[in-house]
Length: 185
Length: 129
Image (cartoon, rainbow over all chains, first blue to last red; front, side):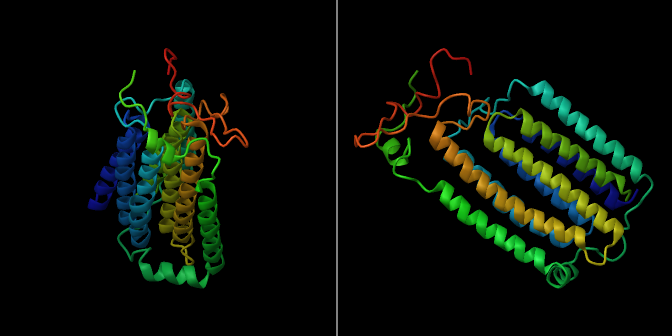
């Protein structure tokens, strides 16, 4: 077993363990921080699969931007951050069943279909920046442009959705004036 | 490296994401489950691309597109969650729609018909959480 394989197994264990913690931990903020560990170890997996460019994009956008946005959402909704703040719903057994069945079906189908195939990770790297950039701007330009339009639409949509209209039931200034009841009850 | 390893890892992550989306009460935590599922799909694309050695590098390019779309999705999701919080006072996906939104301001009176305490409609005494 080569070094790359050992490292990949370690990264897999890390990703699955922290992924389980993301969906089971009791602290809201801890869930976001465990998500950092999961996404980071997935970036490590991409590196070991020689997809370097995607790995660094993953670190920049997922670990850098998406998790920060999630933490913003947690803070802006004044979510309780103490223990047992991230409760689960009543249908937890159904959710466990659905998750296990999904994993089993996908795993059995994929493992049966691609048993014995091997990835060559020792040769030339498959995902250096230059070939990926060549492919994007030579063959996938249309998709690139469509993604840019989608990003613009999402930006405008987010601004419209989060703009505060004067007849909002809660506005932050009134809350700041009166203040939430501290420690009452 | 056997191709099956990344595939099994992505199946496990996808199942964890499904569980997270179905079981979590908080809308932001459900979004984290969606992120896990997207990352499982990304890992599959990367593994198959590196295995197949595609000339057009389509797997990695599509992974980059999915990462961009995930950023857009999380931005819009954050906006929707904030809107939900302003309307209902909480982001509990089980209770949204099962109870009426907070009282709207009365038209023309100039006074908002706001609940006296901002937390009153969400936490009631003796109500099981």
